[in-house]
Length: 128
Image 1 (cartoon, rainbow, N blue to C red):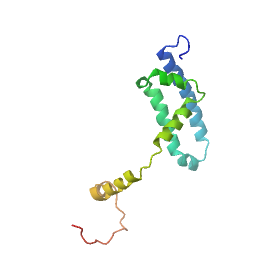
Image 2 (cartoon, helix red, strand yellow):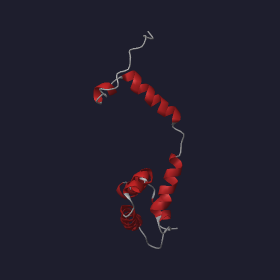
Image 3 (cartoon, rainbow, N blue to C red):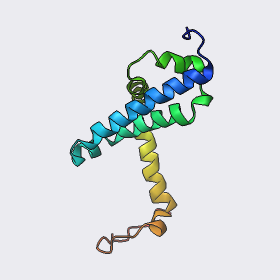
Image 4 (tube, one colour):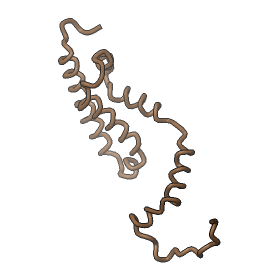
């Protein structure tokens, strides 16, 4: 499947250049948008950045066949970003509730973050 005489290094270099070009274009497009829209699209931007960094800084960790396959796309970053976002589409409501429980029961948040001086709940009956 590899183009004639392309070494693994050449595949990685070609993909790196394609991704670098696309990342520059993507970044420039995002920076032209209103700040509120950029803020609203933070998850999409984070996914794009994660995919870009994985494929450029850690490409040696991935089989060259995967990387070579991405070269067939005009915009491989968008292809990987869409798949990554899809893979992350999970219901985290149970984990979120657990995080809230941990905040309340660990009480280190009260030491690590400033408390609102106006909000002083009435001490309730002890459950112990």
